Length: 473
Image (cartoon, rainbow, N blue to C red; front, side, top):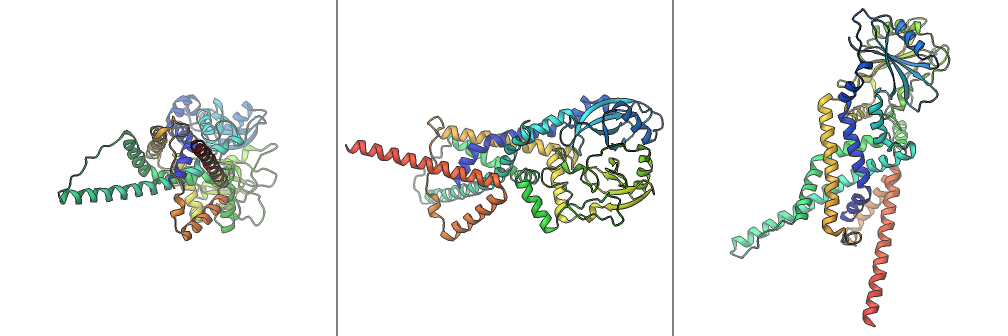
């Protein structure tokens, strides 16, 4: 365990450190973004809001080359309406967003926004840095490695901390017994490395629950483990219900929505953002004149959140989708499909009807993103990110104090696995194989660690044998 913890800390530590610091930056910036883009986000007109159709029309005139993707009405007085367009040059889950003053339909600005959370350019850059180091899909390997190993090093570190605590307790009892019998007891001298170990262990215990949460939720939208999570949820019927906006006679909503599955989440793409049945890329012309009637029908169906997204049909005969997008507590993510011609709701998805696992996934992702509990959530994430970063730095300091300046440092003793009972070794091996298959980058990197360890051991034995032969001759 100690040897695995050592290798994982040394080799995967940089990924965990980067993820912790970029995640901390993301959690710190919502208020900064509101200040930085104040002009775009703020409506100055005090007039009665114009119909949404007029606001959309003004945005369309400002974006003649864009195809309407969605409309987000101003959630409160003083806020602007967002009209989202797709344009050829934008990447996945990126929208050209026009900000419209509801009172006079004046355009207050145009920005590229990202994901269901609608983050603006500053947080979009931090998000991509956290997710892929700005390297696109290949860069996602880094964040998946960090998420895969974070839980392993956290649980392994806890096991080592408990073992060290038992050892100290036993030593203290032995010293007390000697003192009671009148024997001399030497004083305890705490070395610099011992103090580093103590702080590393304490920090690990304090951040353990948060580290496990970040690891689990991070893996749900990773490239490889995320695909396995999605497949497992689909097989067990744990998917988020999908709104059917196809406009068919028998609209239903059982299917794979992907809102919290492979590759999607709030702020980190949320590629399931437009995944309601019948809603993908909105090609061609959409008649925005229906948007007010659609909104009235949705309000009549108890879609009452302030933050909404209204998505036009992807093809003729389809229904509009109206979705609550308020990720704060209590979660508001109900959705309805509205037939604009009839002004009737033809399908609905209610959060209360989600399977328990789908609810937990929604809450876990929103907690990870810092949106579930507002300021408290942000403060928690900042403390957690800084704690993980400090723990990683302390881990490298321990390595340095152990003797990192001498090649790879003083080696951790080998062969400890031989002390493990055969049944426990067999169970552990089977568990490692199963987890490694389900979390592929963890399994592959674990095999790489083992190969490196075997190679280092073989080279060490060869050198020791060569030195022994030289001495004997």
